[in-house]
Length: 421
Image (cartoon, rainbow, N blue to C red; front, side, top):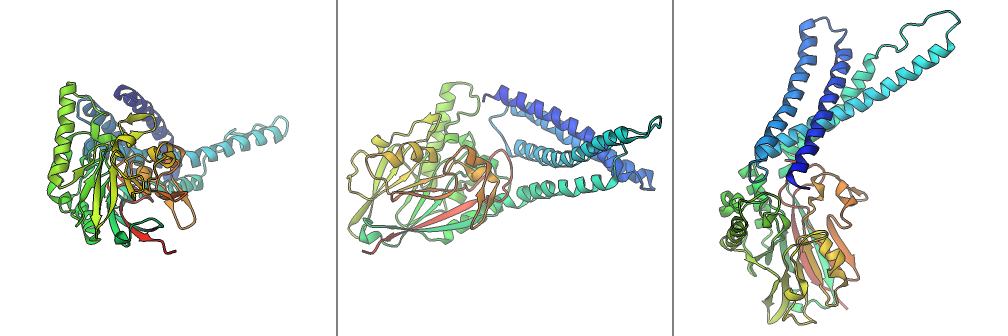
């Protein structure tokens, strides 16, 4: 969707939010109706109205500056996140209140039908009961507190995920070989340098043999990573650091003054990968050698279902022995779904990212859910199909919504093991 279309969508949502405000206002009036202090009643009802409408107004002002900015800044993301917090809080409040009003409506109908002849029952709708407003407040408190937790803590609550994978044809020298993966840094969204460093320290502490980054270093512009260059350059591994590009790295989601400016931005970003100490793989491969044996590390440009299909697996595999043990870095898991798992050349392991797990969901030992699953078949963690593995990293950073809830930022460590006969 182009930027103008996004603005129209948000204007419609903002109008709906203001309608919710009207409904919530009267629900709060019911809740405070029996309070003795008139001043306190007004502080709650009109105070809510001022804050909530103010958040919506700030969103509209923020959208105005977004239309002239080079993409979303942390300011834009915070404004959007606060708006979403209030929007979903109001939505839950309104749903409870609305159910109560439906009950009042049917109660009025039943009373009207059952009334004795000639007797007038007033009013047709009984007054809202305070306990309905109390329930609405309790229910609305769940998204309110959850969203604030997601914004204040969740987005930097880094989790370490470890997987051990067994292969028949893994070269003996690579038995126990470890790979640390991070993905989707989205450096343009960061607003807490110390918190970012905590995630980097977790990755450093793994002391893996190989480090890989699987795309989306920035939201849109190369300069976004510059304040963090000295931090992410701390990620070193004995067998090297390798990276690929993600869909956001190409700068396709903002307006540039010219194609030359856009191309220069991408060139600068590639230089930043080099300055970070990352070997950027652009539809190419390298050989990792250990103890006289080899594996092939292959990296493609972004290939996504329906957009930015610059990844060329055949080109990237040129010169690779068909019997070599192969690890592929490919940002978007739909590339694995549609191309890699069916490719005549066996790719033993594909490392991807991109989905962020929608930054929201539920993951337990026996149950997983995220809204992103309605778009992506494989959206987080490990997938195995006929011994071709895909691992989808949940992302190191965040985008648009300045928070994470249930799907936490991730550092991955994969250990390769030789399957014993």
